[in-house]
Length: 446
Image 1 (tube, rainbow, N blue to C red):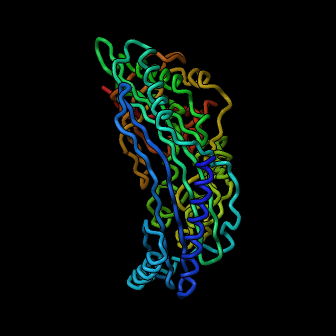
Image 2: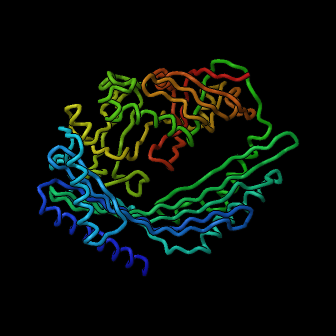
């Protein structure tokens, strides 16, 4: 209760800082937006039951952006005093006086702003307790060592817990705020047999600390994953069906974000430049963005410039429905903001209503990819090439681990080659998706 009262007091203080900043800006002939983000939290890192570091965080910053006609100036500071705010406003105005005029810059259209922030159940405070945080990390590591004698070392076990206060206002009359919490645990272990050593990890993320995976279960899962990679083999170069497991399938779909972001669209630096309202996925596949999912990791009542967030289809029946736009690139494209300044929210990707085991049987023979490496994705051409590790699948059964392979293709072909998505949805990311089966991809090995 003490912590909650302190947070409420801090939230009121930050709201008053934004209000005072807006009042001071009224004396100037400018448009202004003001944003404060304050984060309070703890981070614990242990290895082999030894505490390596404990970090406490209480960090906040005030951001002011002014629009002086069509010129922009931005400043930030950790000093929230009146004198500091006055200096920040003057500095931002001076910067705008020397900035190039840009007809497309400015505050969002008032009709799109959020004047009543929706309650999304994002705030679940926990009295930060170092001893409990250390115990959570140690328990998961001990469970991993106990699970299998081939677990011989730890790369670390972590606990993070943060509370964030966001307050946003602008000279159009908006002044809204929301709070959120985020807790995570992570465990990485090393396994060894006579011929090799392998590492693997697992993690848990939640808005509520009680919804995290129990540390003993997390440790067991991590150990099982590390042991399962022992005896990894190389395979020959071939074309093969592939499944992106649910823990990495969000990465596969994340490339769509860059491909349809407003900046890349107006600069014509995306291979999807001519594909709005065109079919780019199988006709059974839908991607819905829901920023108002209760306790969602990607939920927000408004975006980074105060535009209210709304649910919408990104992909419907395989057809691209929208770009991801903020006010600036929307004006560039003669469109309206989609409320995506700062990124995406919760993307919910439809599935084929089959289990992971059924998806393996559907593939019959091919590769189950469980980890991706490298950054070999070109959004201008759509070309894709990344290192991968995983398992060889034969007759719908996982046979043995494989490593040192590269998978490559073009995103346009890869998206069209999706033949199934299973129901094993991973909810630890903004993109929530099951395992994804592609009919064919180029695999480079021996």
